[in-house]
Length: 400
Image (cartoon, rainbow, N blue to C red; front, side, top):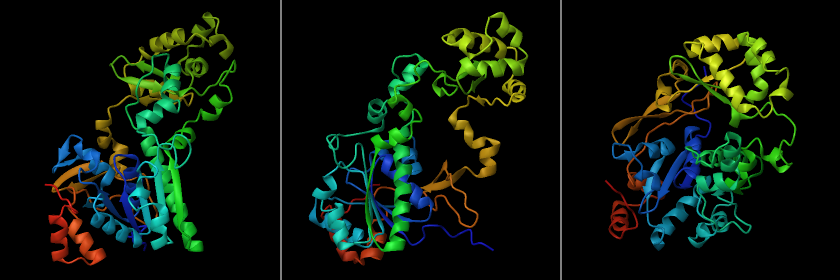
């Protein structure tokens, strides 16, 4: 029988020098797969620790991104702090950093320095615009990339609104997933060749890869052609009970399937609408018509049953807070309770399911620097006296 306690990346040690969301989401994935992830925080701590709400004194958002890791905090501006991280890098399989290009090198922790001591290291740099080029020096957070890589403009154009901010840091999670994929590929390459690798993953190029309209826009857009795929124009409709649904696709083309399913083709004909060429430029009229049809149904279940005859899907608009109680989420174990410094927190488990290995967080999160002493004792064989000295000189930081 398969040992479901086994994990894919058992025995792989990851040194995590990342902060906020993009880098930590990458290393959270590696931790979920069984890697021993050692997170290094600066004296002021990861910015995500300032988030609210908190459980056990730890920000819940921080726990989501950093569950299953071991928490160290030290001052890299001090020579002894740099020395400790250099020594940890020398015995690690993977190092992930999301400093601006050049910062890691100035700290003595760039790829060249680390690989000299550890030629097999898989070293991943996550940045806004990559490690080279004229924009490499720029600071980048998700809203910056969303704006500059076309997401905000495209969304506004498709919705017919002024530019609006995104509520979710899409590109942070996207680049984290791309970085994790690249790290796994580099580990496989090392297994075959023994060679380490420097991986350069940029948020900007991730945003290009994660937008299905990048090539279309670069080629000049739709022009006069009619595309059935326009998620930014998907119809939002309200039932009689007040609930909302979203019907995917371009309403100017999908309305014919909806009309057929609901027995409304005669109304379409009365409007003079016989094909998609007749409905172009009539988005407002189409939405009003579809809303009138939707209002004939008491509930989402009734409307969904009617549309299912034409194999047209829909999604009920629901608050994120309710998802954990959905039948599918409960059946899949989509959420798991972890310990946040003594208090239980429910976080997403993992999107991965393996037939013979487990995936997901093995632990919760801790206070800043909570694992300083046990990790440095175990991995670098530091004595209590040496640790006391490092604490007293401000090299090691722990915060209640």
